[in-house]
Image 1 (cartoon, each protein chain N blue to C red):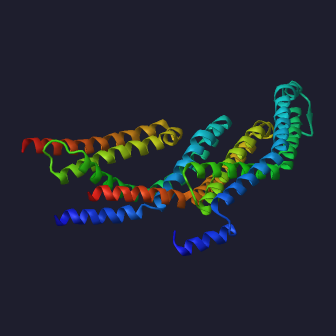
Image 2 (cartoon, helix red, strand yellow; image 1 turned 120 degrees about the vertical axis):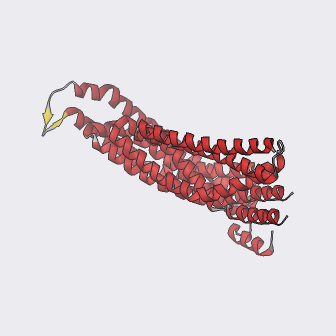
Length: 159
Length: 202
């Protein structure tokens, strides 16, 4: 019971802290990404490869800075979401704490996929091999998270 | 709304209600668009015509010539002339374009505010600043497209350097725009976050 209360208190502080800077950082990052990927990089592509690389780098750096600033709070937000989802969708015989972990891992997987998709045009412009390496890392990371989810599901079934 | 906030709102509106202020700002923006719109559109049409003639007629003719004046080939000189003319046209309506973009931003801000049910003058201003920045970046990008090809004829490095400068400027401009709208977004997300908080407590 006590741990439940602690989780709620933590949720409350997390929810309050996401108010301003996260939305600012994320919206600025998305806006810069949109203009960079849809306008400036195609224009640079018509000049030469060096310009495309340079413009790519100029858009990539602020996008990464803004995203890195937002990531810790987005992670806390995902944790809150996991609690809400765990309360809403109950499945099998898994305990509530484990259900929260399952949803947390699932949301992390989604987050990794979305972040990778945002980085895809930049990485591909740097070099397709860099994109490939990052894709492999993202896939492995997702695989381990999925493995964790399956482990929890199997353990609950065994019990 | 608390008394303090009411007093603050009264001060910022000069004693007018939000509806009156919004309507006045909308009318002002519409007037600006009406006043400078025709001039800007005519200048843009002129610039596009010059670009088309240059690209389709003068440059191909110049490229077929082998003469070199003071070390510069004819097509570079023609491109330079066209760039100067385009620059004169664009910069002569620069102030009008600024007025037009802020007018459009004002109208959009009013419409956006109306749709989302905003009843705050600060919100209207924030939307206006944000949209102003975004429209400005779009206008500068389109203007760059007019110049890029001709600058490339003068020297291949010029459009690249200009583009890099524009990208750096637009990153900061977009950053500023988002800062203006951040408090609005923060307000909306805080409402949503409170809802989430209630759900997680159930």
